Length: 354
Image (cartoon, rainbow, N blue to C red):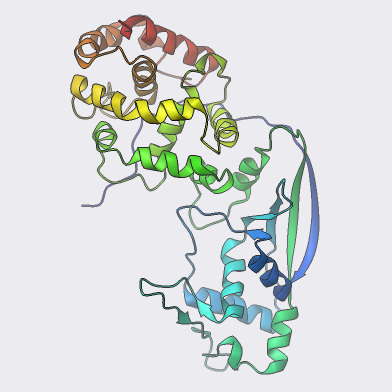
């Protein structure tokens, strides 16, 4: 039976209000120039769970639109600090055209083989039906190479020390078949060793036991929980709401994942989940049958920060914590509010530490 996405108690979270100085300007690039830019690495197509998903028919109809001179929606490109262009919206359109000019559809299979890209699903009357790029007449090849795909370029001018605007632009402009969740977007726009490090921790069997899911959450909600723990680890007193923006900043700031805190967190995480499972059994942190992220965060962080907490001690003190009226008040409602987070973690530390 297929597993559904990770189910958490809803949190009443405030959306971020962000102010950036953004420059937006159009550019008209030929498909040939876009192909050359891609080969040089000047254009970055972010890697996230949903990669290229178009069918060959969808891609073929797009190619035909260019050949017929029909209008095609623009790309949205984010100009990063290295003056490279990150595709915010239009990945499927751009990739389809790059594939066709290259002559192959999709990525190589397990044996390294690729399918030749012949235009499929077109009208029987279309002169382009079942033709690869090399099989087009030269005039049509030239028309395609010189066809223009407009791009809207977005560059953040200020603030210079926080370029999380790309997250918010991606979040609002992404027009894929299914809306991407926050952690999926973070994985796309805040690239670096932190992405693989969090995903590796997410595979730990005892963490999967805590979540009650053998397979990873397709929406990356489980990875976001680990990011939340790491982002608050030894620095929760500096937390400021909203949580979504706090996690954006922490993931960007720690993208290299090479600090002493990162090393300690990586070492402590397996030890902490072992203590939790031994003390609380399968599927803990569920006061209302589904995971309460505020409870999970409070207990896991306290255990992560204090290696002296044993499973026997946690088993005894957890019940006391959950019965505390003050703690109950800060695990419901606006649980990501600055004061709620700090009060909750302070209460947990006071009650769970030996």
